[in-house]
Length: 113
Image (tube, rainbow, N blue to C red; front, side, top):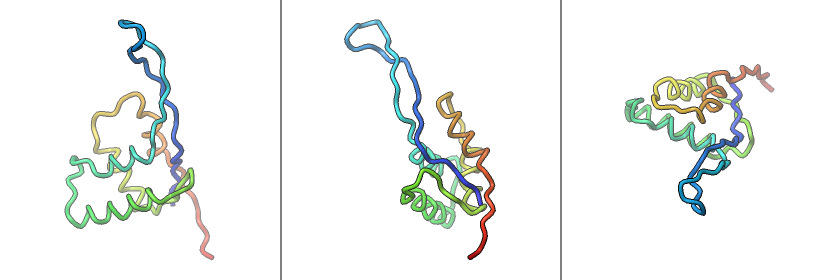
């Protein structure tokens, strides 16, 4: 199984200052990990078939209902998310943490009860 950290992180950007035209200010915003993964899972670049789309949606619902800061995924579930990361083009600097969390997801040994 793979463990992925789903906790949002803060990104910093420079944005126009509405109070002082022509000036910029530093701003901080949360980077929504779950939302970003969900969007990547349904990118058209994956060219999902009908059956793959249904499987992808089952995994998406698992992510959406996760209330914890981390999620454990079966290897095939992890590979679905990893494939979305590998296929998508257009990442920016703010996405480095997201991509790192996916590509370097910890392998976890789970014992059967």
